Amino acid sequence: MLNPEIPFKKIQSFIRRQGRLTPGQQLALDTHWDKYCLNPELDYNFSEVFGRTAPLIMEIGFGNGESLAKMAAANPGQDYLGIEVHRPGVGHLLMLLEQGGISNVRIYCHDAIEILEKKIPDHALAGLHLFFPDPWPKKKHHKRRIVNTGFARLLTRKLVAGGYFHAATDWQHYAEWMLDILGAEAGMDNCSRTGGYCGRPDYRPLTKFEQRGLRLGHGVWDLIFKAS
Image 1 (cartoon, one colour):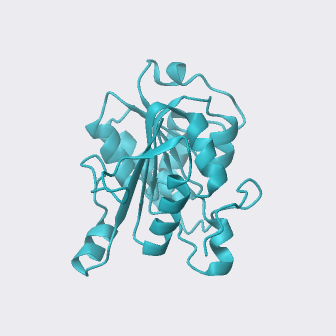
Image 2 (cartoon, rainbow, N blue to C red):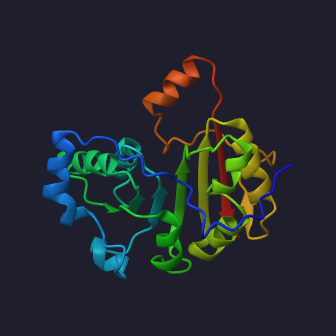
Image 3 (cartoon, rainbow, N blue to C red):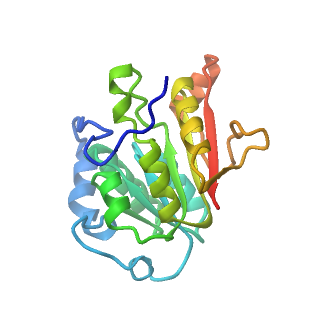
């Protein structure tokens, strides 16, 4: 049985597996941090940060940043906040942003829930992406899953009316877990006509890992819910 009634505030949904920085990633961190990265201790007016007023999309856990960089480059009319705790991934995204001249991305290297709760104004996000989060497959670790009822309620506060939450996972049990939790949240409406999963939208790029999994017959589940 699922037990989605789990508080998320005191339980981390991630482990800081920092790994080894490549010389290029370290150089990017040293050179471009101040240009793209935000201080988690400060409060920002994001219209001032980006120099304009545009739909604001957040991605939690962007990994190596390749998908986020592709989305931002393909959608210059939107602004993106990427959150990632692993510095090699941040360094890789900094490289991509600088090489691609992509100016509509800013980064937090910090805990996503803390940023979402404390640094994002209510009804500020046009969208929030959670692509392939850690599924914490062992039952004793399910309490660490980022999606729970508290997270769903937080979504209803942070999304604009009509704003969307898009999650993707290659773990069927986690997909079912998220579908149950989000489906029970009064302020969120499933975009699937069947009340289940959605097809992958064009704006979500296929990762190399995902392409390999699909070739091997592995499933991927996309969930898209809108704030009512």
